[in-house]
Length: 352
Image (tube, rainbow, N blue to C red):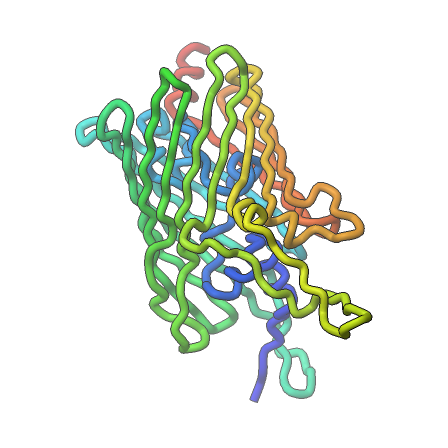
């Protein structure tokens, strides 16, 4: 009977590098749900941020950020990843004046590439593909002048050759915006749902997260300081790495265990970030992921592990964002996102 060469090392490396989840990474499926495939989100640390503006890409991660300024906006994002893996999404937003609701729809994908199928003797039996897709619809509504709520519903599907897995998930978000203070606070319950069918037949769960984010915009300076807090549903994110080279105490012969302090455990949840807005057409963005640096940096050469950065530009009527996030010297992500509003394109043509 023919067997499939599934290139497990490629898929495992992708999961470890893509989301840097370590302990959590092996306890849930459909990790595509955690990939920060928006350039702006990626450059600010990889977690949903509390910014209430006209960027549809932020509304895809926290639906409470959806608002009327995102109406008739199209967003496209592309992320070439490790070992030929391709990630991206396409999204559209529409505001309904009568209902005072902003709707969004998106399709996200991960293309793992093409693999070779072989039988027991190693004979080439042709090729097959592997990938995952998320179809998402969302809605956001302002309750009053300072508070907004929103929800996403997602259908997830994964395929590996002739095998398939599916799941359903939802996000629920809330946002508090006090423009006079320059303060925005956002909370999100992500990936509430279930696995409908899987590859193994065993019970599996989605990567549920509780997230909190806040930003402060200086009134007379072009800085927006932010802080995102991830995985509030689980305090201790540390884990034991069976592959680590352990040091042995020469006196006792016992392994030397490096203790993790309470402060370090707290920092595992925190991602500080900053946006520098020189003008409406030019932004610089920076983020730091302490957990990613601790888990993925090479001890002898940590480099920029855990650090992310990016730029936002407005070229004509198109908003272009780019981000660079390093996992370790062997791997990094480069994300490009484009956004445009059809109403602005129409105005430009009218003026011409």
